[in-house]
Image (cartoon, rainbow, N blue to C red; front, side, top):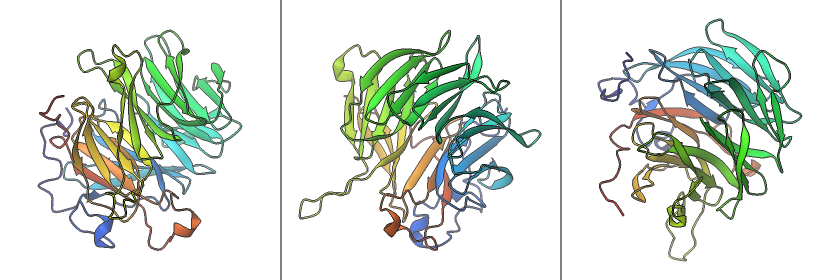
Length: 369
């Protein structure tokens, strides 16, 4: 039984985590800082699956590394190990048993990191940077799904150097998510493709994005009663999220909402920021969004209401995730190049990864529409 059960007050008895490094706005929420964070922008973070007795966090970054920490009950983090690619790491995922981490890189490969032996081996190859990697565990097969800027989606048996299946796509892969038996892939040019993974991966539906601007992140959500995936949230660079059902019973079930925008000033001009990542709470089914505005927000899609917005950080929030029990929310503050090269000051813009106790903050709203 994990120490991280949902009724624990993660970190609240700790003396650690209240010390703020750097300016006051680098940690305005006074959350726990992960020790020895990456040296460059953090592209992805993922907690270990609930099958493990301990809780681990991995992060991939633009310094070409993937780091792993053990997260303790009191909020402290212990750096455990790291692996390196020949280019920036764009995505990570865990195997269902928590023994392996898959790492997708701009070096056009995916590596499988065996945490027990601390060895990494290449398990996938593309002709361009690999943007997404997901482990698929089906009753009859298991494989790694990789999406690349070479306009292909590939499925790999980790014991073979050739893919089991390679699917040509209309454009480069920008975002993807897997929750068996559903996969959703968003490509350049605003196309969305939904796959069924039951017997083998096959296309279920192809659609144009409900958002008018480039999508950046996608996250699948479950039906609350059946606990099976029925739809996804899609975030765009125009401060907007779409809630989309794969087979809506009522077209009105699909909707979009604005987020990560500044309050309009007296001139009526509003700053609009990208939605960098979306994560669904594993217990409550509520969701988090993080953006280039340097804030995270919690939402209840069913009540169509906002639960919480953070204070503003001095850097964009680049990615986020919940642990398996849903009592820890982790997020990374790091430069996302939303203001281009001119907006980058390496000495001031040090990446941070934070964690907060979040179980109660993400409880569904009492308001219902």
